[in-house]
Image (cartoon, rainbow, N blue to C red):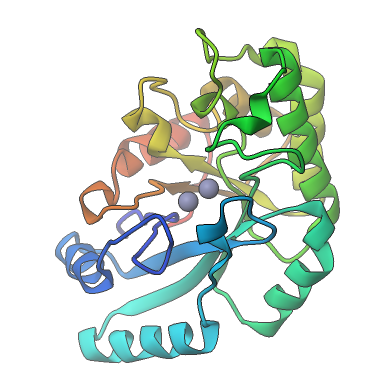
Length: 253
Ligand SMILES: [Zn+2]
Ligand SMILES: [Zn+2]
């Protein structure tokens, strides 16, 4: 069975124009058995364009129609943008729709947006990255009904620092805590390959964290490109999946 891309954005995400049927045609051409779409559903986004939401009744109906039209299995997923103060709303939302796959992500802190940059205002790199990991820890301690944590250590992507990279050793305690909670709750992590398309040239999370996840008993793992363009569909997914298998993981297909 062919590997799958477990993190795919379409024109239904505010930051993508990608055509759904082009993705389907590509997935068929690659000999895949299904495709998974994980458009954004943000809660408490600071960037207003992310607060215009998909009508999921229509979205799910559209996916069913496309499945019929192309005779191809579509898994309807979602990437949740978590914010603590919206926890009840997020649970209501996830209870209302029967998603095939849910990614839980942190895209902003209570104080600021990573993308717009104000999350980092007046913070040292250590403090900003630590604040980010605290948000991830809070999410995994409180959120139910998700499958994998999205891009677990991607905060360096946005850090306005000369050397954006972080050393696992500097954040070992909190990262271990996050991984232990994920494992205890029988959830998983994704390995997001978007960092391989950036100057950082790493997966999120990076290898040391993946090895630690394995060491702590982590099993559930998916690989996703986080594509916002059809051209990036499956980018570095196969190579990353093979690397994970060499580490001893069984990658979800
Ligand atoms: Zn994300
Ligand atoms: Zn995404």
